Image 1: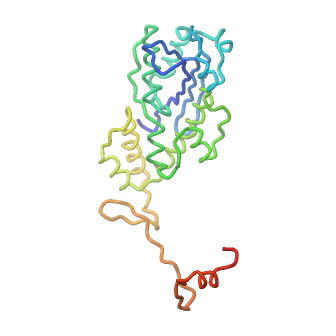
Image 2: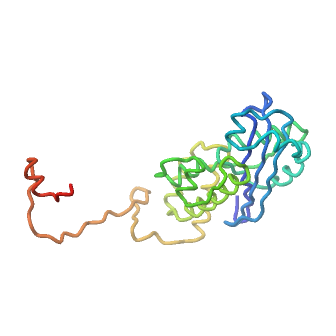
Image 3: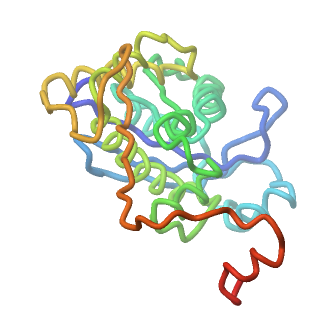
Length: 254
């Protein structure tokens, strides 16, 4: 990964979760991101040559009639392979999307993609640790990213691409010592996700930004300084122990 890396943010909708048992892609979406900006998009329905289960139709809104005249995966495999080659593959749950796409490529005679792949769920968990949910739609609401059609490959890929841009911006705002500690941990993250922080460390080092005034470094960790609240009232107060005194002290609104 470097400054000119192209990230192929991919989302797929499928008939099921297991290629080996006959699950097939019914929709493919890809958004290319480079230097913090979206540079291209590609999306298509795919004829799976099998019936889409009712539960999948209800979840995605994709019907058998919709994909009946769509191209077969065989017909678009070359386009997808060329689109993804020489990129870093990104998905929200990369351990599902990346192997699934590779399995479909192999099924129609293409070699598997030997490219790096990173997981936006894991990046979100690390860089947005206080978010209550890491589902794509919940993250989009938290970050005020418009997400009109959840479980539609083109819209999910677009939202994930916008999320990736936000995550990279957050990472580049971290102190050098924080990124150094993250890299030193050498955590086992999905696919090549850990490589993101090694790249981020190099970027932050080049920026040479001073440590913000509200932070200090202790034992190799960047910590937030505590703020001493100013005391503006010299009166001494005694905690009201009884219910009567509490009601007397507090406003009637309480």
